[in-house]
Amino acid sequence: MSDLHVLKVFCGPGGNAGNLLGVVLDGGAHPERAERQALAMELQFSETVFVDDAAEGRVDIYTPGARLLFAGHPLVGTGWLLRREGFVVETLRPEAGDVPAWEAGEFSWIRGRAAWAAGRRTKQYGSVAEVDALGVPPLGTGWLYAWAWADEAAGGVRTRGFPGRGDGIEEDEATGAAAVVLTEELQRPLNIRQGVGSQILTRPRPDGVVDVGGRVVAHEVRTL
Image (tube, rainbow, N blue to C red; front, side, top):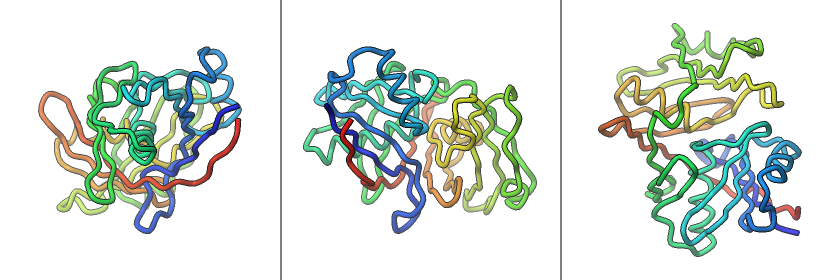
């Protein structure tokens, strides 16, 4: 048996919205990748994280249908949780590479590379209303991050994310990796409103690196 911490990541002001994340702090209780993948499919969160070494920040990330080398909302949420559990977390280590992690005020942050989030296609629309009106794209059209300026002068963006994987997640409420890709393309800090009311903050850095941050709230703890 092991505990599953369920968090809400990239919450809006006051803790509303946010993307649910499952984190298994005792990854050693589920050592095999096949078991982890099956558990992620059963849970049906957009991502589930298994912590293999909390002190070293070693983590393993799964969608319901695939293992990921890098993902934004799982790393932001896991960094927050490890700090709350008493670990000094300066670096998380998913398969992609070392990811700096820190906290500033009410926001938890990570720093990742846009190249680690390859395969997410961005598409600009003419208005927030057009983005709000979108339906789920057909399967086979790929990962779509739809966006429009809400306040271009201030860097305000409205987005919606459609993974298109056929794994039960038709729309992602808040997507850090896609936000990294969009920020690298636009080369400016963004204040993103995604899904029903989630908030993601980003800042571009040199050489394809992007900071991404948001609020994290504990939702519940389950026993697996």
